[in-house]
Length: 148
Image (cartoon, rainbow, N blue to C red):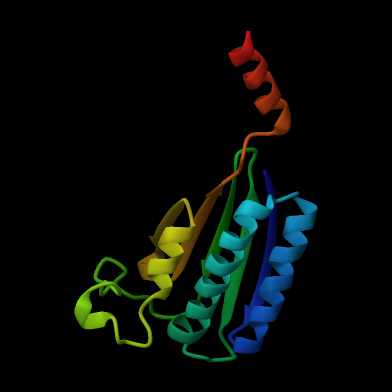
């Protein structure tokens, strides 16, 4: 398993660093375009939440972003130095009473873009899993098997 980690101070402008990290990872690990967009939106949203809500814009606190590359999946871990939150008790942003609220959609969005979402450390750590498509050689052998 390959692993890459970065640490950024809690400044909103550092979202650009995260975007570059994801772009570089796309090139380095040949991430398919079809999941690249989901990764970019979900991971930048998670880091943004860590900066805003976790570390409360405290530039002396950091956000830690790790990428774990496995044969069939990518895992992004985002951790902040805040106090955490109750991730089991979030308002549903699609409920009629919440439709006009300007916020509250980030985790909802992340849960729909990633294949798996796991919270730990009282909500200070978020693990996002994205499944990778089978390698082209696997697809060819499967197609040959079906045709036979």
